[in-house]
Length: 130
Image (spheres, rainbow, N blue to C red):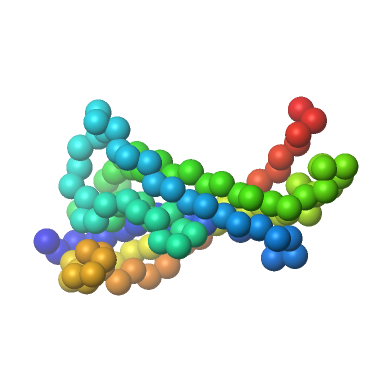
């Protein structure tokens, strides 16, 4: 199967100044999810969420991804300074689009070697007082 392969990767970033732990889990796909052929299933890789690897054959083709990931952050914070502690955490969600023209897959991961083609960083703001 030759074509252009894509996948979306995401990771949550926390200020390295704070003691923290990040957990990433991949939810099971819904039984009534849109059916399209994925080259490789969605998964987690250390602290990174990796969508299913999908193929785009035509220009302006749309593929519905229904991969669901949960990110949990465990922080050590001062309960008396909750707002300031959350602001100092500097939570950011990094979302990347990866691409490959190859359909040669690695037998260990069932995915083609991917190159980063685009990335966006979303700053997350939490207000415990609202």
